[in-house]
Each structure stands twice: as C-alpha cells, then as structure tokens.
Amino acid sequence: MLVDLRRLPSSTAVTWRDDGGVRIGASARIAHLARNPELLAAFPLLARSCAAVGSAALRTMGTLGGNLCQRPRCWYFRGGFACLRSGGDSCSARAGEHQYHAILLDRGSETAGASRVHPSDPAVALTALDAIVHVAGSAGARDIPIADFFSGSAGRHDAETNLAPGEIVVAVSLPGSARGGVQHYEKAMQRGAFDFALVSLAATRREDGEVRLVLGGVALRPWRVTDSIEEDVASGGLSDDDIETLAARALYDAVPLPKNGFKVDMAGALLRRGIATIVAR
Image: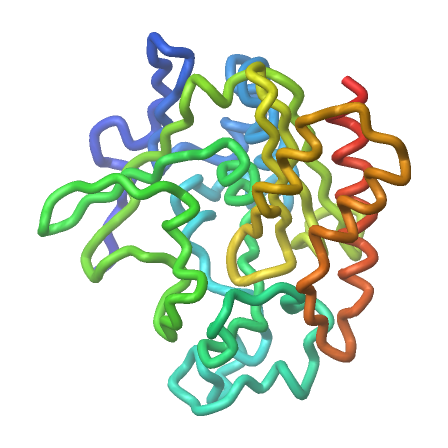
C-alpha cells in the first residue's frame, strides 16, 4: 500500500517560533525550502544545502523527510548483489568499486557495511544546526536529536536511521540558538551540478561564538568534527598554519580504501576553506 504523507495536517508547513526557531513539515518540498526568504535570512546553511540537491526536477518533487530517509547510493546494494545491506555476509564495495565510499568509520561499524555514505545534503546542514527530528508511529510520538537519528555504529543492516518499524518522520525543528551568525556550505562534486557530494562541509559560527563543523560524503552519517577542534576554531586568532593543523587533526582517523584516498585531500581542502571563512567573518 502506498500512502501519501503530504495529506497529513501541517506536513508541508514552515512554522516560525517566538524564540527564532522553526519547525518544518517533513513533506515540505526541497525546492521551496531552497528559496524560502525567511529561511535564507535565518538559516542560510539549510537553504543552501537544499539548493545543492540534485536537479531542479528532483528538488521540486523531493521532500525534506524523504531526503533524510533515503537509502545509500552504493551500486552493489542498488544492483541486487548479496551484500551486507541486502542480507549477504560481506561488503562487495570494500574490494570492488568504492571511489565514492566512506573514509571515516564509527567504531565497530565495519561489520554493518559501513563503507557506504549517506547521500543527503540537508542532513549535513541540519546536523550543524542541531536539528531535532520529530517522528510518530503506533507507539506514539518522540523527538530525536539529528545526531542520534542516523544509526551510525549501531550495526543495523536494514536501515540508515533509528526509525522503529512503523514510524515516520513528521517534522524537523531548528533551535533559535542556531539562527544567524556565519553559516557556510560547500559541496564538491564530480560533475558541476545534479550530483551527489564527493565531500561536503557545513560550517557555522553562531552568535554566541560556538562553532559547528560537519562533513558529508565521507561516512555512514553526517560526520561532526570533534568538540576540541570546534573549540579551537571558536577561540579565533588562527593563522594559516593553525587552520592547516586543525584540518589535518579532523581527518587523523580517516581510513580510506585503495581507490578513494582523494577524499581525504578533498575533505581537508573544504575544512581549510570553511574554517577560514567563518573565522574571517
């Protein structure tokens, strides 16, 4: 049975709160969010990440909830191979075509076919903005911090999120504390447009001085850089050498496969530019 979730009440609504935060219905179209003037002014990081999604046609049809819940783009999984994600006992990509796969792994996640990457652009921005994902199901409603929404090291073979069977995403909320400041989004692609990220970066320095750095295209989930590095960036007064060192530290645990080591260099370049941008402004 196919159910049209867009018919649920408020499923496409963008509702602003008194604290400056916003609640976005899961069926809101990606294209609408990309050009929403209030969103562009308050949370440009999310609007820009939505504008970077696929083609104009995909943005017009795609929804925020659907984008967060999409399956991995690994061609072995999508091609019907007996891989870990489809019930097999090995990850075909690790010894095969893995140019676009992960370079950063959660501890213990190798057994879950974690060489794939999560393909969502908005998920990277929402992680940097400390979003809350609101879900509902037969057992009731619950709120999940986006950092916990993606299964990460949980070792699940059947899903990329922590949604329980029968649950759906109904909305996503952004806190007023993440509003404004300096927000930077950059996406590196093999083609100039209409493509998934080889590597992406969401970087923000908030009004209170806190910093968030989140990489996309490098892991099973949006990969937030460690707190200590974010704190060092927030301290300011960074030279070019300091920025180089911080970017290298952020990728110290990278474990590229034989054909995707270029992602380490690419992620480092995006981190250096992103850090310099939010510090300079």
